[in-house]
Length: 363
Image (cartoon, rainbow, N blue to C red):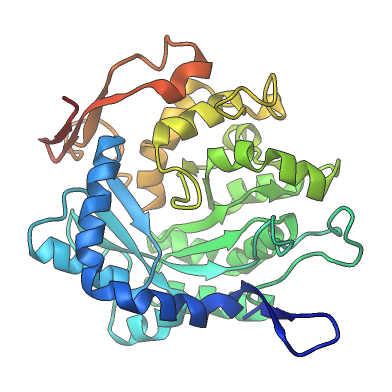
């Protein structure tokens, strides 16, 4: 797996900066003290999410979080639906135990395995076809080498496990699509979704490949607006798609929106606002970043309801208000179809229902 620890120039003294998979031992050590309290912390967090109108989450945080969700569910305290992914480091164990995507019940289910193709934009570790602007020779990091990525994808699908792969840079997305190509038909026959998490920067020809392969683009609209100055600085004027929601939707791709919380605020209405305007909440940049890639209010709402259900393999019973579907819904204090799009983020959730039960009301 790709990662690095930096050192002070000309010495062996660590600089304090670690990148990508090199941070894993530190992350594990820092979380050990939280494990006994994790289920209670999740319960508190879920109350905040319900107040934002969130009725289902997808979580990729690993075995400790999975166990905390299971404990909450066993105690009857899981008040929203949760789709819990499998960490790549736990994949072999999950396969040995016969775990499959979709296992569980209508409140807590097993999700896809989470793989990683590259890093992030700000750390200059997103994997690009061309050098970062102003950083000659640096095209980012392949966190998982392509040959290994292909093996992991095939292993998961053969075991009945869906795949969600993190890819931000255009090269990373190309390589993930390449890894998905030989297994895509088999995955679809088995009802297993192949997803790319983030799908931020794409070669235009890869937009078509998403559609041809039936790959879900799992995207976070607020990344487009919060990353705007950074992506302009680091990527310049290269002719690729930056958060190309309109192009993907027009090509027939399932575009599932989310937040990437806690990296960004979890509030879906912040995401709807970003998708419709392509501006930050302060209105910058004026007119929106690459406004031709904006979506309609209806498409944005679908992106936060119907399409995530499809991405989770639950499209036949979740994500819409229809007979036979989960009675998960919210009430808003203003109509997003008639309000000024610039003000959508200010809409307030008045009530939230899960399985027909009112689980939040705003006093």
